[in-house]
Amino acid sequence: MEYADFQCPYCARAAPVLHEFAETSEGQVRLVFRHFPVFDIHPYALTAALAAEAAGLQHRFWEMHDLLFARQDRLADKFLHSYAVSLGIDADRVVGDAAQPYGDAVEADYARGIEQGVRGTPTIFINGEPYRGRTEIAPLRKAASLSLRRHRRAPWSRG
Image 1: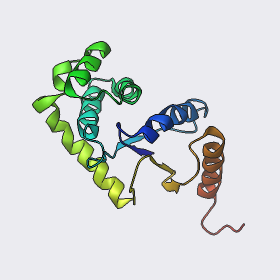
Image 2 (image 1 turned 180 degrees about the vertical axis):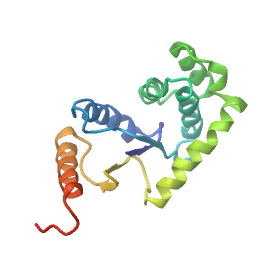
Image 3 (image 1 turned 90 degrees about the horizontal axis):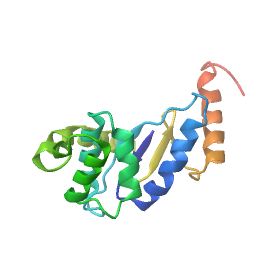
Image 4 (image 1 turned 180 degrees about the horizontal axis):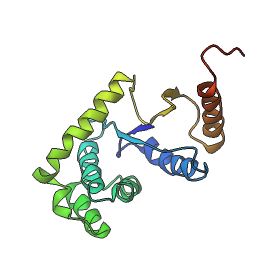
């Protein structure tokens, strides 16, 4: 699970690595994205999150996700609208008042992140445990493997 902000440059660098990690895991890893817009630093993070949610309800979340990270220097409404058009979805639903109903989902992710101790982005959890390593394939695989072994053991096991 990743908590991320679409305007965060570190999240943009992590996105393709996490995608590759999930895609090359032979079904062992599922990537879950959670919104954690850092409003005070990134003025367009919330509107980008709303646009992603709106795109998700039109079955284009990951496509919008990729566009937002690839073009994170262009996240004003006019750009979000054009990204939606390029994805073939209802562009009027991703910006302005029409996007506001998706705020509840973004707020819920943010609140869940705070409860889990998220303080910045990207924050990654593997099997519910905070991951503190580098966002690179080899360390992620190692952490996932160790976590899987811990979760498969009975609570009374040793060693």
